[in-house]
Structure formats: C-alpha cells, structure tokens
Image: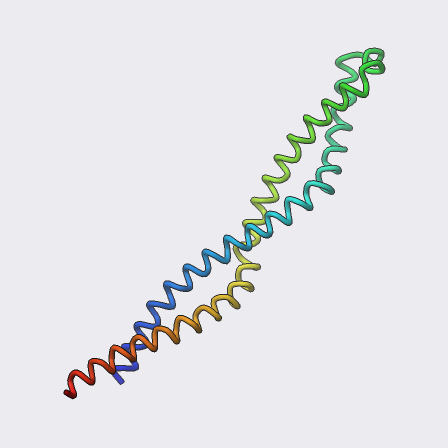
Length: 147
C-alpha cells in the first residue's frame, strides 16, 4: 500500500512538470506553424482584396486633390508609389491581425488535439521513468531495512 502511494505521488509530480513543459513547447510550435501558414495565405489573397478596396477609395481622393489633368500625366508613377505604400501598410496590419487571431484560435482547439497526443506519449515515458526510479528507491530502502 505505502509503496503504491509513494509511487503515485512521485509520478503525479513528475507528470505535472512534464505536461506543463510539453504544453508550452507544443503551443509554441503550433502557433509558429499556424502563423507561418496564415501569413502566407494573407499575403496573396487578402492583401490583394484589401488593397484593391483601399486603392479604389484613395485614387478618387488623390485625383480630387491634385486635379484630373495633372493626374492624367503623373498617373501611373504616382499611383504606383501610393499603391506600394498602401500595400505595405495594409500587409502589416492584416498580418498583425491574423497573427493575433491565429494565436487566439490555436490556444484552444488545435492545441487541445495536438497536445493530447503529445502529452499522452510524454506522460507514458515519464511514468515509466518515475516508476522505475521510485521502485528502485523503495527496493533499496527495503533491502537496507532487511539487512
């Protein structure tokens, strides 16, 4: 009885340590992967959409400010520069938003799945190690007592 209890306690301690470590690692990895994927997706589709909208809004403003005749001359270069600026701004904000969303998403669902598997594996290893250690200790104690 006593041995079983001691083993259980030790195992619980070790497992708790391992689980927290593993969770932290897994979360970090998953978040990194998701963010990478998210960012790549964003760059192409979302940005082009958003940019199109933003540019569409900005062009009439620019035209109004500068005057349509001047714009007709400057048109391509100026607009191109403006578009570049807008694109880089938009990309930054969109990516930032995505990363935030991804992190929020990842924390709960994905991690729960991935981490259940990983934790199970790690816990199994940890348990066997701990049991071996504890058993060894207990056996050593018993042997000492016996002799």
